[in-house]
Amino acid sequence: MEVLDRGDAEFHFVDPDDFREYVRDRKNRNWEDKLMDESEAVKKFVSDGDYLAYDFSSLTRGPQSLIREIIRQRKKYLWICAKFTLLESVLLAGAGCIDKIDVGFLGFGPYIARKVQNGEVKVYDWSNGSITYRLIAGAMGVPFIPARDLLGTDTFKKSGAMAVKDPFTGKPVALLPALNPDVAIIHVQEADIYGNARVYGPTVATLETAMASKKVIISAERIVETIEFRKEPNMTIIPYYLVDAVVHAPFGAYPGGTQGYYEMDSEHYLMLSSIREEEDMQRYLEEYIYSVDSHEEFLEKRVGMKKLKELIKKAQILEGYR
Image (tube, one colour):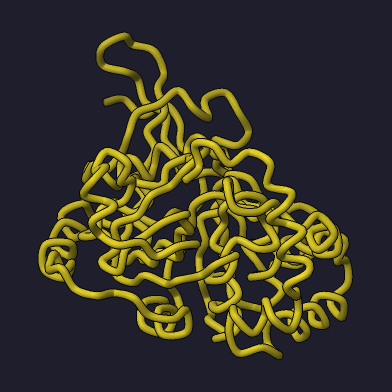
């Protein structure tokens, strides 16, 4: 194919054959109990220098308890996939956990802007759509996927995409490199101890993110019996053999919400989004993450049952989410 143009960004890429070999040799397909706390899961499956992907955002069903644990363990040199992301990238940057971000939608505000402008964090431009396409390609086991996304934009120039002449139509088409993260963290409404998981409500690329990733950590609002999955197998979004660890994390998306369970804490969210200075960020990290040892302690000492009950009451739409 004739190459017409290409972006100038660095991009994370794993040879599809290497990924297939990893899955074949290292993914466990046995029915084994994978339930563990977030500390063990992050310690075991998230390493310094990993490429990290997560499903959904800090507003809705984001894996916030796992993000906080990554910060608590002071992981370093992470490259993150910021797809439909908001405050996760800001907190991870403030904690010094990340040095590269693939941007689909980046957390806003002057704090993260200053980190980027100062060169402390490198950003590579994509879009929510193109990153999703890349994960789909990674899940399919192909090296790239063709799309019209990014063509004719400045985003293309700052991405790792390539424009070629379509051999069928002769028109330009973008080729997006497959994305196979080292680890994915995904929050769900229900899971069993083996890793089967259900997601109710909006999704973006939940299954594809899990399929494309070498390691997968699931956090769940509820742990249910496996018989429930067997009763309605069509409701299983992520099958057990893709998952490496299961964490029981009620209110695991806080301060965001989870459909059918609780709404987001808008006051906490506004406090986070108003952080401008380094001392404010470090004060927040110390009070809400470093000074507590677990998600449970965070909920008990920094949020409180009264607030959690209020958020449960605000979850007006329950039908179809359980």
